[in-house]
Length: 394
Image 1 (tube, rainbow, N blue to C red):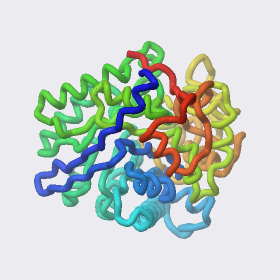
Image 2: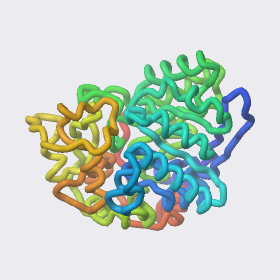
Image 3: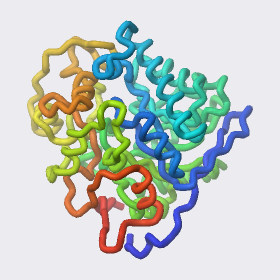
Image 4: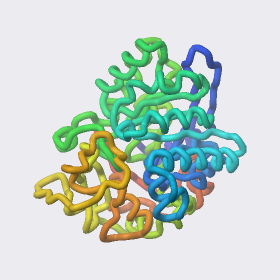
């Protein structure tokens, strides 16, 4: 997309609940929400700052109790799932206070053993939107049915998955309130496709976004927004996604380079340093969740690289049985331990999930307050700077 297109104003993102007992509608002045970077990167400081600047702030709802115990020394007398619930309740309350009752979302992995409980406590706590990925959230409409003003959105990585989710949820009497497409070629963390899908170029962003938009329109769901994610870095990328038929974007990795990211756990200084200084592309590694995942190349992630690498299981304990798909006797490592080590700035043991913009040259990498970053997203980079996230493949 040409740079002169950045003069175009961004349209707002409109969300409304499709629960039959709700008339709730929300308009975000800037059509940007943040990805749910777990464990603990997207906390109240980051989420509330994004909302306060006109976007949609989203908390991570992934196994918060463990870093609360290991890093903050809180909830140490609680069992794992109870600690997760209490930590999330605290974060939702704190975020609502910081953004004066403005938009608050929560991103939860379907693969979690306590997915149902975390979704229920999120809705009960009054969040505006639950985003669910790392699996298809078939049961989410029933889980939150008693909370009609909590909107729900699945994360998909293909048109087929989008069709399945719409069909299944419509059969339950509830259309999705948004559909979030995460590109398997760009997004950080767990991917919704196989290694072969990624290597052979399946499910390209332009195709999936445009076909999902058409599928929704054909079913009379013109008011269900498609939100594109993966590889979004600046206003040019946002406008490009909108030109495909998206109504908004989800952005994670660039929000990692903000003052507010990970502030609750000391500011994730090493994570930001790796992002700022790294000129090595991210790698795909094998996750105990059973999915390929994209991460910064480090001594740890290289050991579990998913391509041309013999994987040797790491001896480990299982602190919380967090993943439904993880067999603690057979899993290759404890993902919870290593994500928490990343919060603790441990290079040797940390697992640093990040999108494909890590390692790219020629993009603007600065640690900014959210206020400044949101202004750049809304109005474009300063003259002469093109923070190109790389060409999306049509």
